Length: 340
Image (tube, rainbow, N blue to C red; front, side, top):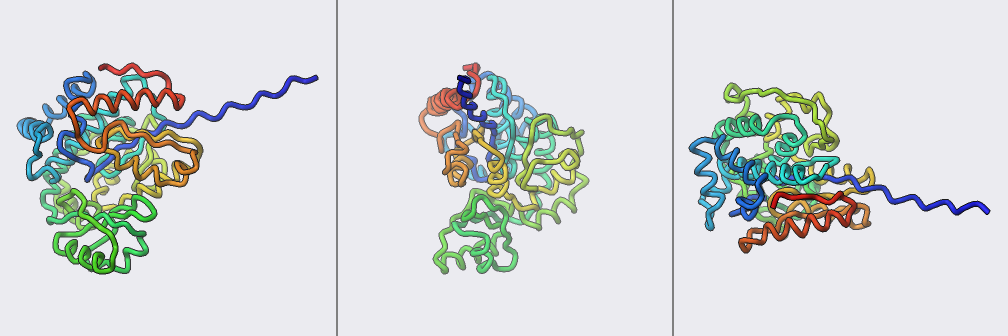
């Protein structure tokens, strides 16, 4: 009698590191890892040193119990999000995690590209420093989170307002200069549509940003770019980033004017088999979005956040990371050896 054919083992899920963008910043985000994880601390200190005198201001604002009034401005939020995302991703990789895919939202895509080897951390810091100077010329404005589909929202758009991000089938971000943003918020609330201001003081992912970079393009340097050594998905193209785009600086400098299609990109990624999504940045915004996808609902993908949703007790961050690393082993990841 023939021996029974053994059942095939289920495929190992692809490990995806995700990195949040503007709006995810909050007081003391990931600060519990600072001075505890050698890798995290080294990466953050490198970033602060690279920014010179402005780096001291960034560090003080990041660690303050009460954030400065300008904390949501591009001058604070963008460099801190980039640094924290890169520091957390580096900490995981140096602990032995080998991600199969990297995916970021807005400035989180810069962190994903850095960890994929498209450009160095130093190049990313220099670019962000110049980027901040350029986009200080942008009109004041912001973004509005709306619990509705793009089609539902389009009926209420007023001149000057665009859909800046599609995060889920019924979760979009509108972008506009200040006056137009107030007008569309009033229109949406009048129609009974739930909305709230996102934590941004500039109209990111709005065409007006294209005019700003065109006028000040000479202020931006072009460090060398390389094809990614790890699969990199782009929330601007909705799919795996091709080498020719990854190595085109116009693609990167144009991002602040282009819509973020994080929701459609995530669903496209998850359609290719089992995945384990690990949010390697502050908060749990991307994990919350992932848990609303059909793939996670069907058990074909798992979404895990490394940090609490917001800053808490001094040991909350390190305890959350330790618990997450324990969970990773249950999902088939090799045991990690963190430096804390």
